[in-house]
Amino acid sequence: MPYASKFFNGGRPDFGKLAHLDDELAKYYRKGRLDFRKESVCISLTKAIFQHEFGLRWSIPPGHLCPAIPSRLEYLCWIETLLKFEGDLQLPIRGLDIGTGASCVYPLLGAKLLGFYFTATEVDQESYQSALKNIQDNNLDSQVEIRKASQGEILHGVMRGTDTFHFVMCNPPFFADMSESSSHPFRVKTGDGRQMVTSGGEVSFISQMARESVEWSQNIRWFTSLVGRKKDLGILQRYIQQNITTEVRRTCLKQGRTSRWIIAWSFKSHGALVTE
Ligand SMILES: C[S@@+](CC[C@H](N)C(=O)[O-])C[C@H]1O[C@@H](n2cnc3c(N)ncnc32)[C@H](O)[C@@H]1O
Image 1 (cartoon, rainbow, N blue to C red):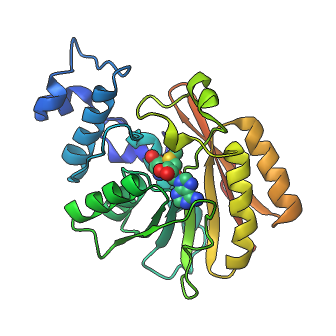
Image 2: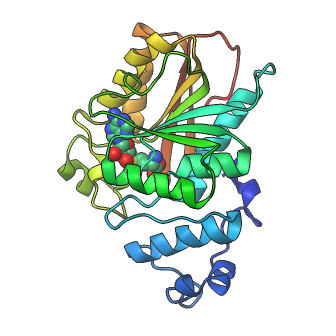
């Protein structure tokens, strides 16, 4: 965790300290351990980190994906590093979060910890309502806006003519169907998996996003997305370099035994930068 560790004393969340501060989490803290196989434990821990580490109020309805905060912070911090190489940034930094989920995790953390402004999009009505609640419960309405997206559209339909953003970020639905979701070794530990499924999987979703990005090449500096599988990373990198733009970056984010990748592309020339 080279980027996000700066937000935690000792480099990672201190479960013992959090359990001491949080009655709900304390119920699950036994012999210095938390049992992450239980959804309720993941949710209580995430809630406690939001509240006690970052002063944010947070909730999600049952059945929705519960985010692992350190890895979400890692992605945000990588974007911050990517942008810092550019010198002439017009502040404040503005980002577009595609598929913000019920948690609205990237906008909440990015606004509170990094001072970013966000527009978030979400296609699922229940997730949209929950994300809106998280924004309002934290009085972040002036810093975070949410737009309802239509199924099948990623940038089209949510981008407006005058919008400009420094970056787009996205944690896409990774899997092509529910069976793939439940058999994957890094499968969702919380929620019912619906949020992780899209027709054609992540390659289809991110390549559509890349095709749509051409129309917004002058409005957005960096288009980025998480990628869940290394073989998909290679497929996407080749696709984008051959069909969209040659300015492509990639990096690997490791958390415990889990690896995720980020792919980023731009229509401006930026010189040498962070890579794997
Ligand atoms: C894997 S979840 C990520 C949620 C959250 N960003 C996170 O990192 O925990 C993907 C989200 O994208 C949403 N989604 C799927 N297709 C979308 C689209 N075309 N536009 C906006 N959101 C979409 C899903 O409803 C789901 O909430």
